[in-house]
Amino acid sequence: MHKFYFNDCLPLNCSEQQIASCLNDTLSEYQTLKTKYNNDIEGVISSKHANEIILNNIAQLSSLQDSINALSREMKRYAFAVFTKYPIESYSEISDEDDLIENSYYIEIGDTRHNAFHIKIAQENNGILFSLALHEQVCENNITVYDKNNVTFSILNLYGKNINTSCISRKIQEQNIAKADNWDKLLFMMGKNIYHSERFKKGFDNVSADIQKVIINHFLKAKQRNGITPFYADEDLIKDVTPDKGTSIKVYELRIFKPVAYRIYFYESESNNKIYLGLMEKKPNPKVQDNHISTARDIIKELVAISPF
Image (cartoon, rainbow, N blue to C red; front, side, top):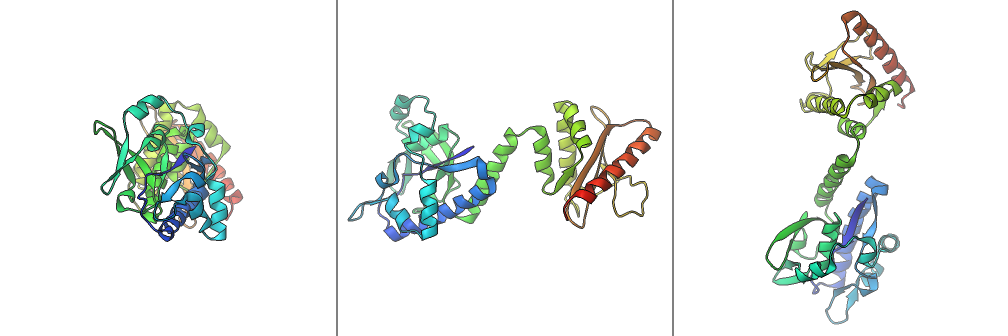
């Protein structure tokens, strides 16, 4: 789960229109991430209720709830569904509150220092800030926070621009991959539209984690050749071993020599960008290997037949 924290370190001299516009932008980009990662993201944590978070001290005080009320009907409904997690202490692990207070964490916006106590809590919980782009120093992919001794740390920051959201998305992907098992890492690295046989999955599961990593790294090496297609046959790393060359469905062989010789049989369709993982076996003698290739061809044909167009 990736936690988002509302950044209440903001300049308080912006108009209500500016605040509502920036809130709409960041909320829209948050919605994009929520759509992409779904169950990995759930709501925005805030220090207190939206009507208690002051965003503007010009004339009459204006709160986060006031800014939400200024949004379109659809976005207002979405915002009220998002800002339900408060106070921050109920949704975060806090190691030593006295230490957090003692260190006097702050961020700088213009000439003003803002108390970053809540941002430090977000950082300790591997959180991502939900910020309003009301100042250029808030429009950074990472916000720098200082303590009383000028020791710094940074925290990921969503501020409502497409290019920033792409950066946050990449970081979320990296974190998801780091936590994933080797099978999910393989599928993620290879891309979309991956189809595999039960026999391939069983073969992958039955080898050691070290061998699994070697397989992943060999496919990654193939992808980094930057060819016409990610996994084209070059007769070196990947070889075309299709038994009957006239057929439209090919059998490719990813060749692994160390620490154990393995052959991975698959097919990459250039017409629809689908990849079919058929079979993986230790390299045997040539006659048995021919049988493996024929078996892989039959498995791949079946995968092609049952996969959606």
